[in-house]
Amino acid sequence: MVQFLGLEIEPIIGLEIHVQLATRTKMWCACPLEFGAEPNTRVCPTCLGLPGALPVMNRQAVELAVKAALALGCRIATFTKWDRKGYYYPDLPKNYQISQYDLPLADSGLFEFRFSERITRVRIIRAHLEEDAGKNVHDFPGFTGVDLNRAGTPLLEIVTAPDLHSAEEARDFARELQRLVSYLGVSEANMQKGQMRFEPNINLRITKEGREYRTPIVEVKNLNSFRSVHLAIQYEIRRQAEEWLETGVVAATGNKSNRGWDDEREITVPQREKEEAHDYRYFPDPDLVPVTTDSRWVAQLKDQMPELPACRTERLISEYKVPARDAPALVDDRASADLLDEAAALCGEKVAVAKHFMSFWAKLANERQTSISQLGVPAACMAELTRLQCDGVINASAAAQIAEHMAQAVWPVEEGAEERRGEGAEEGRGKEEEGDGLVGKRAAGELAAPIRPQGGRACPSPRALAEQLGLIQSQDTGQIAAWVDAAFARPENQKAIQDAIANRNPKKLQAARGFLLGQVMKISGGKADPKIVGGLVDERLAALAGEAGG
Image (cartoon, one colour):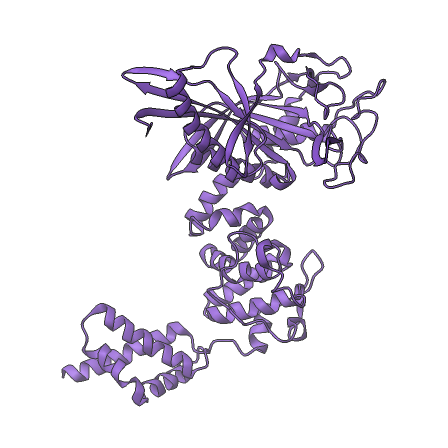
């Protein structure tokens, strides 16, 4: 419940989502799907609705739809059919759309996602297959053009129950659903290309003087950005509350309506009254046979399902200690998340591998405008690099430097790539806590014998690189003790030594100790093992403190 204009208001929001499936061809014919092709060049008699042309079902579209429905926890129908949904628009040349009415492919699902530090559950009423219409083009003076390249594109329509109660919650649901379908490979889900469109159904439950009223349902059509989903719902909540105060009109049969979104003015505008089911004159399509799904086939698809994004995000947060704000960006690229798991399994250091991924591997991928998985560095090399650092063979800055050489060997940065990064860089990448400015002047392949991953690219051995670049940390206790002696003997370090001996304030003591450890590392050129240095510094400070106390 929210307070608005002196009223207690609860928004009631359901969503209809159209997801363009990632098939090569259309739903009922062999016409290729190609965004941006010349208008009306990817058409045939079937998608033009010419007499005598018969549709043939795209099996891959059904398979992708079943995968998405399984991920949404839906029940898959054992028997479903195709229906003609009759209405006339210029971009629908057959005068009907092939869809599914009373026997959808899937129903009774549940989608869970994290919103405002809690788990929100949204029921999925149904998920069914249908074809897209063409596109009206209003760019011409005095007339409208019709591009039918998109006509017949396979769509999965997902219909939720009205379980969302704020514009922010609906926006986050939309984001999570986009993550899911793109992660599964069901759809590219590029909203700028219209591959995923949202249509929120919105009305209000208003409580006044102990009585409850519900405003008429409004469906806002064809929203293709999370921003527009958020702003359109926000606007409708205000508009419906104000309209109810003025008119008192409540929800009733026949008073649903459709509105469009004006992105420039950030308002919804009337379109038409919303049709009821009987207005579409549904009847079974006589040219298409019903579809029966084999339970073994569905079970096989279910067994092939990967770990879903929401679950994987929570696992990376708990097991890999990835910050909650960073985990979604890593999970969204499935191949990179798989690479992380593989590298961690090889070296047994989940937290350390994740730190590498979120720091220098992300930085290197960002520089090349790609993902971590597409850098070409195999999991075995990443695991070996992590193990070298965890074993104290190299330090953190050396690991970042070696990673630069490895990436340079398998994928050299093109001249001018840094300037081209811009807005194309993937959100959530580009952390640069380690390794800034350490790109080698020579390709790492010139320095070390390569390890060849399955992809055929040559990746140099991290250990060989560490040796040839002089980055191996010394574990020679005698040599390190000499570096410690040198640091303790320097006049400019005496104040820190005295602070560490005399000061009982834990923070100041730790700061003085850290300063001295840094001085030793500086003298050693970064080659001293920090663990051994820390132990020797503590021993020297304890001995000096004992002498001072005696």
